Length: 238
Image 1 (tube, rainbow, N blue to C red):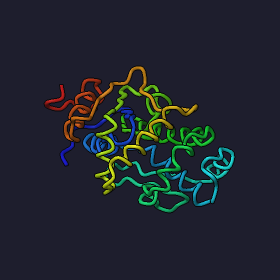
Image 2: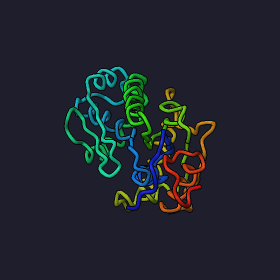
Image 3: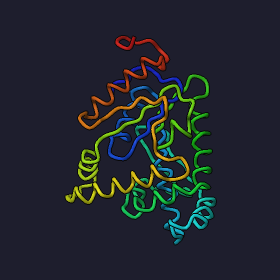
Image 4: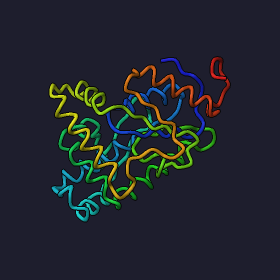
């Protein structure tokens, strides 16, 4: 894959599932020789830890106690994204249906968010030391984790489009059921008391309903260039 200069600083990308967020942020980080952080994977690892401990994801006290004991670490290499739970690679495990169901109530616990946000901010500080850059994706990056990011993007798409994408990605035939799950997750994430899913006031909103990944990536590249976040001037980015 051709690279296009080096990113300086933070690009914060938020939005609900099915907007193409993970794919496009990894590709953007690779193109810009930047690090990459999937904060959602960290919350999924926390949810997996809660399930493995036999705790009830709907019990905030139990969840907080379990997650406080967990060691969650993620790779910041966009070409080899991974997440580790107590030293074990759980990248595949966290995408299972049980974790998908548990992640919203687990991530809504204030103690869990405080713990992981602190860790995420440290990763960002380490990545941006000197002239470094990082692309960070999640649901509260522009509003909570990195509110001072020089570029904040909020990806959207219709529920129907997002459900179709998720169904195709997961190999599921019942798109209607996937849509119900998508809308249920949206409601939980946007209504939680701590760090709800919403666009930052200064975020650039991009509807991906009618766009493929290449088109979304091109738009993000344009935004990065317009904000002056490329370390070296390169042809076509002025």
